[in-house]
Length: 425
Image (tube, rainbow, N blue to C red; front, side, top):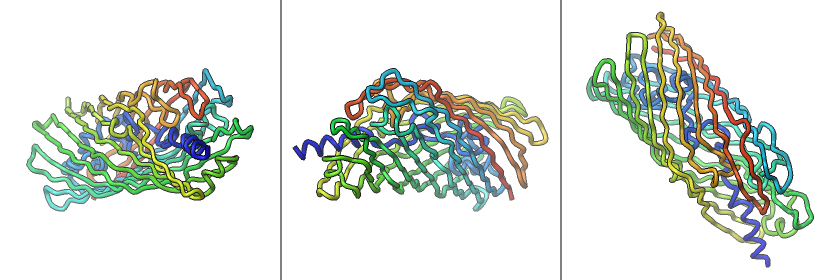
């Protein structure tokens, strides 16, 4: 009987791990295309792959650094304002829909490019891959999957760009990814005649690595192509598993000081883009990418239960699919280095309505963005940008710990507001 209860109690976690990145703006899956610069936020991420304009190319496409004529430091900050309101049709456990579950967050970015010689550029980047959190409240209809999460992910590292000739440049970078995650899940104890307990993943963290490579090909003065490859990355989150309010067998089996490890792969991604200078003032841009989110689909979970000496592992298959993206943008120079940009993009959903869960309710994504900047060949420059991201309806029909909830997001969008400054030496 004890073993049966132990295995049953573990399903509380195995079905509800990894409430990661859920209400931030992530391309296809949960990669973040906006990196706190106008060329990124203000074009809906479309300009990233063909970035030959500023120091953020050290992160988006290292080959683009070779086009910079001066050394440069760029710093940016973007504020995320999410509005994510779930509307339930069925809730067998009762509760409420949680109101606006999205939490505002601030995401910084810092990029430096230094010329080593006429053809070789060295870059360094600090960029938050994701930030913020989600809080439905402890009475949420889907609380037995998860009801609160906070995530902080920062990547930083060096990159190199090399100009082979006037037509072709290549580049590569390697980045350390530091992730910290906290989450709360309600435990259904109704069969004990008791109120809900709580399980918390406290400061689960990991330091992983990821690399990218890119090229810039410029066959004419007006036409430029860009390509980037982002590698797969192994993430192994580990930390404390805290409990409160547990009764009977739950308390006996789980105790108060347990640990958990969650492992998954961030997928590889392929991005292709072009820019065309239609006139002296107007530049047109387009991009497309393919991200292999099927590589993320299997999540490995290990729980070490201290008081009993028991440990258990399992693999959750989320049945995620690869995603595709397409986008278009423009930049217009009004003269005297006053530049505006606009962009739109679309990302497909990594999961079907049937398999979507409350911990990762990702759906298709639509972006509309704009930017304004005052550029300077040498000296200080600044810019402002904004982006609106619609996340789709995020329909769900799930059963967690024996309780069913069904519904969709009535309101489901995010607004980015960003500003940046850069200095060219």
